[in-house]
Length: 364
Image (cartoon, rainbow, N blue to C red; front, side, top):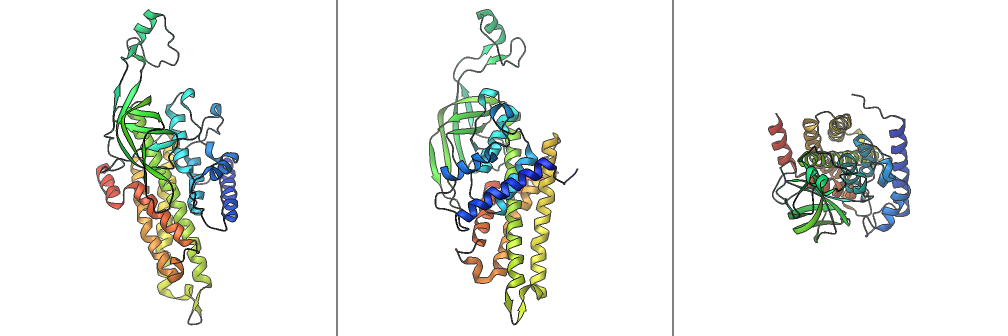
């Protein structure tokens, strides 16, 4: 395992940092009211950041989980409310399991379900509308079987599917939505949605599926992979959030003075900021280990569960950062509140501490 970034990954990190920094300067350090709007997406698209995980044949860079984490960590480090997380997870999932015709430039990801942990099997169901057509039947009919991966007698054309269920926490909804179901991974267009509240103000929705037409991408093995990629992406962005909040807080305690001394000179303060540093490093190590294993095709469930646990625990570290800032940390004109809101939002996407402890226990 090598945590050093190669030249491509370093260039990608630099590009992401520069683009996101320019956006922050254009906003005066604040996030606009229209989170993830067309203007944000266009800037990211022009820089090529929205397509880093899409296949080269689809106009992307064809990169993998480590590069996904590199970009999202920079997003978190600036607490930027941009649609990169669902787009990168969706395009990478399609690149790993879809056909060239199924690739999309931007896609939302619908994985979480009400009352269920992120790692639980999906309760959303899919029903086959058209009778499955087998290779033998297609050959008898003289039909083309281009793209069939099955042998004689296996399904070569899946026909139409209808999805039934409910997905929550679908951030930055897009016209194309990847949906996990008990029967596999599906792609649907413009399903009915209901807006949700998020701590960051980013757009999110509940997707209501009631006989919604869909196209099947792959079987249940792709559902598990999509969940792993989503968990890794959230942990990577949370890693950046904690790193950004740590940098902001260390800068504050070095310059803020009380009783004629900088806050950093007080032992109680140094102990607290050390705890934040330890939390940040623990999350970093677990996250990079998990995405490296994903990129190498190795089992990564335990590493992902540990990374997710440290990601949700990062909220406690943000409480410490707020405490060390005093009243300034609650000022909406000061950036710390954005990091706190991002940490809460990402913890919610993962399901909270108890869900991660349950998952770790099940994997032991």
